[in-house]
Image (spheres, rainbow, N blue to C red):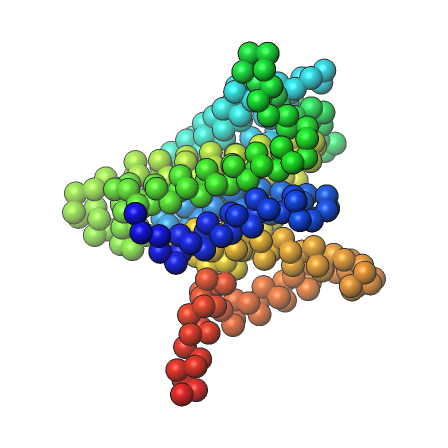
Length: 325
């Protein structure tokens, strides 16, 4: 099988990520874990927005529900078995997405955006205003789940490097699964829905089941990201389900370039690094407390200069020499 430039760039990227724990200190390795978790989150939304044309503004609900399930079902005296904890977290996100999608996908455009936002805010207030998930205080996850086969420990997630490679494996699985999905007949139908849903219906395709399936799959991948974040932080609070979390991940995929899986990953990397940079008091001093303003201005500049996101940077650089010639 011939490896093209895009496949080679993906392999190089994952090879560099695999080398990170051996090349940098704990702070930067932890930052890489954060980036990879958000990249999974961005990839999940890319399936909806970039590949299907469904702009969802409530994606954080699926992210947060899985995180809460991971924290609430983990015992305080030891780690739960990952073989049931992870499927339980993903199933919770998937079931909620099935209910939300079954109703919201009957609307279109701005109405779909507002309905998904409304359902996300409902989930947010369930955890925020009730003692179910600890209210505003949130809930702690004291032990990472155990990866065991009988009495044999396969992977100790309490170890930094082991957890790092677990998250890297989750990102690789997510990227590979979505790449295969988009190359399949199902993926081609999603591309047709994005391009012209009415024409696809005229050709005899029932588009609603495809959109609902994509909605649930995207939610479960978002749940995987939430599960990873809960394990990484050891703490979950209602802000993880808030609307600005949905807005942040939407900015990531726009920043990277809609319509590209690699763009979603690049957008997550760029967004996180810019956020860390602007929050640095060593660089910006007291003005670092206004990091949201700096980040917003930077994203506006990026969108104005690169309408196709970071994925369009290569094409822009290739055009300049020709225009100068």
